[in-house]
Length: 233
Ligand SMILES: [Zn+2]
Image 1 (cartoon, protein in one colour):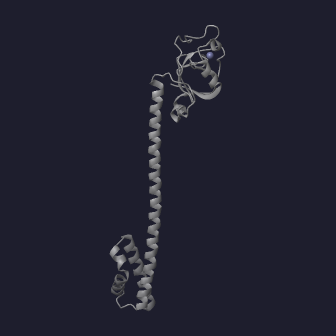
Image 2: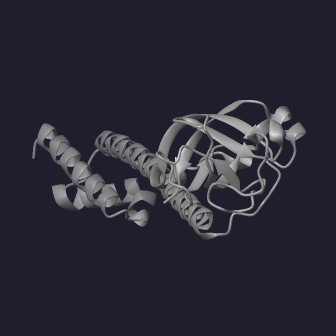
């Protein structure tokens, strides 16, 4: 066998060994490349290789091994990044699902729980959630005014009963245009919470709602506001 053929054979065997060793992730082969290579080459080629040939083959092996290891590290980095992304997505999905469930539960409570009388004032606790926006009927931005039972707010007799016959209560009673919002409807006023459409008023037409409060002082204090209004299912 000529020197050049022996060199070629040595390189081929080195390449085959490298690929098989790395592919099989054979740690022992990777630990002892030169020893394994020398004996295999000598056995295969049928004669003793020169130290230069062994060195050349060993270098080729080392380069191939380093390349394979670099590729393995790169692949591991890509996989780690993909795993991290998938985990982040799974966490985000779980959080979104949890939030949607909580919002659906809160919406069900708004629709079914009694509307308790409470002091009317703006609160960010009453901002419309995604569930409200998705499931209630958005009526648009309304002009809010405030009224109390007094004669100034209601004419000579004042008010003791609403148009629907209920005794008005702050935090529950609102006056609406009943051609848009039927009396008895549950109405969510963003920033103010849930009310019942119980009253009407000659000046309460279209996108206007009059919110009942217990004293004239509070009605004046609250003045005029604007808010998004939703008709709850
Ligand atoms: Zn008044």
